[in-house]
Every structure is written in structure tokens, then in C-alpha cells.
Image 1 (cartoon, rainbow, N blue to C red):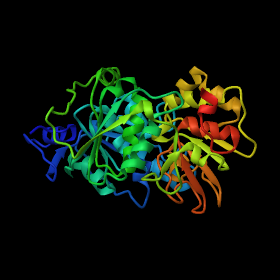
Image 2: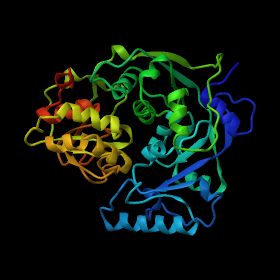
Image 3: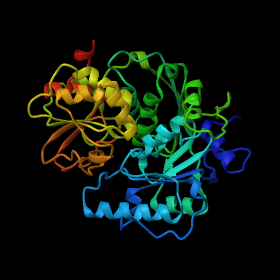
Image 4: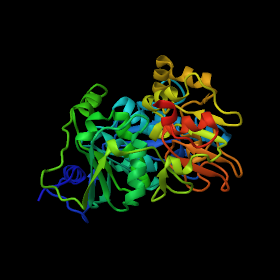
Length: 417
């Protein structure tokens, strides 16, 4: 009986021949990412030693630039830690700063067959690169930095077989919302994506699926490797690797087809994405106060260029705040060169610096009492982006941009067909 991608990586990194669902495996950790929240006074514990500074990445991303004295103090602590252990991969305010999960993509930190941990819940984003990546608790991420290992319980795997090709104005955010709406939570399980439909999807589009898999409560989210993925990693990282393919006789909890060509724009209604998504036409006409594009799920160049196509030559509706946050400085520069940011700014969007920002209610777009926001971020829990009385709808960058133009939740096909 064969193994899935997750099972094969757990076996290889745990020194085993076979791993099955239910097994508890201690594995070697290849990459540990510490971000600014880890260095906050309530979370930080002074680390006296680390296994290997070459395996550590330090990122300032959740509150950048520092919005208050506490955040600034955490950044000071992070810089001192990196200097103490001579850590080379440090992403501070400046040229190569960004949201940690986007930096993994920008710089090739996600390597097929490896294990990557961080204490942010959307760490599964890196699974797009055919590795095992997971958000773990603060103590676990510190232990991984110190000892170079951690443990996981292997869950069953659900395979999503992608077929067809996305219609215009439909994105993998819509594909995710269909999965979440139809199949609900995947707690204790892994998610594996593959199939012929992935050939038409960019790495950025695929990354939205793995990032958003955190909202399914999945343990790991992985993509089957192909030439596009292999070329992406090899062009950014010289480290040798072997792609990991599922065995032909791998045992899955379930295999489900997602026909990309049959999808339409969807929105998740406020407070949860699980079993809470509907066609955009059902929400059309809902008045909004803010439209937000960004985060590790939808702050890529693809996302910004799509939004720019929607708004070019038009203006944001009066009374609507349209905030656009590139996921990294590299994405910011690319969007400057492509003209996407110019088109967005000319339409009335405010371009914010790369940060997690308002996605987690930190800063740069937090919403107030009884306000309504449509967002292309990762999560829409009650109070997630601000006041608990506010309402947060979730859609694709195209849907968010279209809604910014009208002042109401709007089908993006009105502007892109």
C-alpha cells in the first residue's frame, strides 16, 4: 500500500520506511521562521542556543512599519536575536521585507521534500512547493529552533483533483470558497492538490489554495510537483532537492474533483468561511464601507494585476475606502513596474506597505463599529479585522475591486467580460 505526499515526507524526515494515518512521527525541521509576534513581550523567551542559524529565518511582517511602541520593541528584540546568532536571513523594514509566507515564495525558502515550521496559522501556504509546512505553537517553534526537530501526528489525506480551466474573472479564491462551502472543515486531515487542471494555474494561484487551507483546519496542504514548480524553486534556491510524488496506490480518505471551468465568483458571508459561501449574486447589492486586497493569500502580483484590470479608467465609489497591500516589497516593485499600482492608485485605491496589517486586525485598515468590509484576505471571523459589530465578507481580488467601484458587493464579470 503506497503513501501520499505528506506520508512520504514524514517518513523520509522521520527516518522511517512507512508512515500511516495515526502515527506520531518526530521529524527533522529544515526551516524555522520566527516573525515579529514571536518577539512580543508576552511571547518571547530568551533563547540561549539554536541548532543551526542557517535554518532560521527572522521576519518582521505582522506590524510593519511598527504602529506602536510595543511593536517597535518586538522589532528591536528580533534584531538583537538575529545579530546574537548571526542569522543571515533577516527581513526587516526595507528592500526584502514582506509577509513571511510570501517571502517563502519570493526567495525559494520552500523546498520540495522538506519540513518548514512557523507559529503563524497560514504557514501551510508553503505547501504549494511540495513541502510539509505547518503553523505550530510558540513553544513548538522555539523548540524547533533550539533542537532542530518537532513531532506531528499523521492524519488521513483528502485529494483534490483539479480539472478544467478557470473562466475569466474567476480565481482560485473562488475554487477554495467552493471547497470550504461544500466540504466544510478538514480537521486532523491533510489536503493534497493535483490533477491536470493545475497546469493552467500559476504558482501564485496555487498558493492561494494552500494558504487558505488553514481555514479548513487542515494539518498540511501540499501540491503535487510539476515542471512549473520545479523551475520556480530552482531559479530561486541552489539547494538540491527531489520532488515528492504520491504513490499510484496511495490511500486517501477521499478523492474529490474540482472542475475549475464550472466555477463562478463566490463570497463567504461574515464570521466564517466554512460552509458559508454563496454565489456573488446572492450578496450583490450589500453596501460596503471598505474593500481590502492583500495578505499572504491574495497579495501577489497576479492579484494586483487582476484588480487593476477591473478598475482601470474608473474611480472608487464615494464613501468607500479601497486599501491594497502588496504581500512583499518584491511584489510591490513588480507591481510598480507593471503599472498595476498606478492604475489602482489612479482609481482611488490607497496603497499600503507590505504587512499582514488589517488582515489580523493589526493596523492599516482596521474597521470600526457596524462597518462592512469585503476582503480578499485569509479570514473573516467576528472581530478579526476590527470591531466585533463589523461585518466581513470574503471574495476574490476581482470581486473586491468590482465592489470598490460600485460601493456594493458586485459580480466582477460586469467589469471583465
